[in-house]
Amino acid sequence: MRTICVLLLLLLSLPVYSLEYVPGEVIVKMKPSSGQQNSIQNFISKVSTDRKMELKQAFKDMNMYHYKIDDQDSVHNAISDLEMDPDVEFVEPNYIVRKATVFDNQLQSMTPEEVALMKATALSTQTSDIGLPITPSGRQNLGEQGENSVSSKVTALSFVPVVAVVDTGLDINHDVFVDSGAIWTNSAEIPSNGIDDDGNGYIDDVNGWNFVSKNGNMLDDEGHGTHVSGTVLSAGMDIFTTPYEASPMKIMPLKFLDHTGSGKTSDAISAIYYAVNNGAHIINNSWGGAGYSASLHEAIAYSYFNEVSFTAAAGNSGSNNDSSPMYPASYDVPHLMAVAATTSLDDLASFSNYGYASVDLGSPGVFILSTIPCSGGTCGHGTSSGTSMATPFVSGIAAMMLIEAPTMLPYQIKEIIFGESDYIADLDNLINTESRINGTASVTNASTASIDATQPDYTFTPLRTLASSSSGGGCGLVKNMYQQQQPKAGGGNGGAKSTKIPWSVFMILGLFGLPFAIAQFMKKKSVSTQVNRRKHERFKMESTVSMEIGGKKVNGHVNCISQGGVRMNTQELLEKGGVIKMVISSPDGSEQIEVSGQIVWESDKQSYGVQFKNVADEVSDQIENWTKDLSPEPYK
Ligand code: CA
Image 1 (cartoon, rainbow, N blue to C red):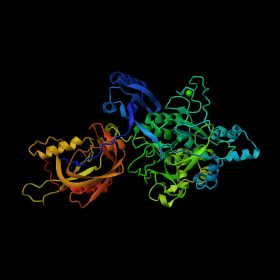
Image 2 (spheres, rainbow, N blue to C red):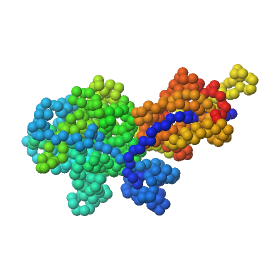
Image 3 (tube, rainbow, N blue to C red):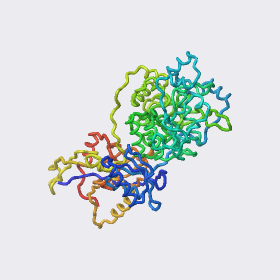
């Protein structure tokens, strides 16, 4: 008996797509079994000798390592080779990511009069629709006591949450932050003594860290981070009226985006790692990129395991994140809140990304008034727009919830924020909750909610997994298949019957990423006398297939079916790393099945593939129907 498998050969070509990454650097995650210090040391010395790789940074708790590769080596080669190393779970480029505002340098400075006017007319939706600022219970009592000292006000609060703003930095000399005492202080670090007093790996990190210039000066040379930080703060205090109140929360500025607003994934991971390990309760992420990074995914999972909330901007391309993911917003970690931007009229902002499956809730993000870096001795306010501006409201509200419920876990915080958000018709079918955040309702709920003791389990599974780490030896679309036995010559069709045969692997779509594969196939096809040396037999089948990749719909033609996979130019697929949706037509064109899956790396085949998840029995049955009458003659 012969086992039939299916290969769809697509005659289509996609444009080469390339994401930006840092030249000469890779991030390596070691397998759990390699967690012992010995094997790590062996690996480090091995790649140092063999490949002249230099360890730049170690994230030991995540078993991840950031390397500089040899000047003569290419990132592509280094990744191809390291992927073969049995100790390596994954290796990837160090991708570039960007702030998530709508335009570059778009901070609009405003005079105090304009600020007052804007505040009075509530053009800035932060003060009206979403019920901010929220007064923490501790501060009201202080007001009655007539206390004016910032320090006494702050210490009177039972709990002071720390919000890490992973961004372009923060002007810590801005009046709002100075007067309100909003800047986080690392009490274990003695300022300016040139010593890493607390042994956390950073010298003089008194108020945070600058991962770009590698020092304790988080000077905001772009403006984005100062604006975002002010908005976080605005959830719990009036940031527009002097004298400023005491801040009910602390901002931990972690600068990883440079003066152009772009940064390295390795630095983002460092910042997240720092935030988690140095006491942050919430991490605000108003930045992103289109490239899936397993190491960044791992860092976010690390924040979940350590019970630190994580907010992320959905992005400003006006596109659908379900088909064209934006990271970190699109990672599936359970506590992550992916935030879209809404207007003062409660519409989805025209620039805002959306996604019913992958974007969670709306928050004001158009002409948001907040703090901008001091200039010429003036520390003022200005407006900016973007999902970058929407996200920090959610972070700030999460902080205010923690004041009411200090032990509340990030997952419950997220559940309450989602549950208490206000339904907005314009978000129908566009984002998950179809709602815009409601700060007052969320904090009120948190103050009375019973606290969940645990969070849902989560297993970090990188999108590009090595086949050896995935179960079942492949990406099974169909577990069982029936093959029709061929009738004997002259016997007609009446004698045909179906016999069940196991299909452990049905559709590993080997996306070899090389356009020449198609060319080679076409060449063979045209030379009818050529011996078919393919490993798997092919069966002729005329069909069409359409796929959704990165927001684009591509149509292809399938003209054979066999074991193996789909071949095409998949550079875009690989680097987008997202969900791929395929519609495959039956041979007679009368039926279609739609399947979706995620791009994975198959080490044994040295190719990328699409791993299908939750494929329904109906799909299995349909394919069985399609193939049962196909001629088993090898396609030539
Ligand atoms: Ca230190």
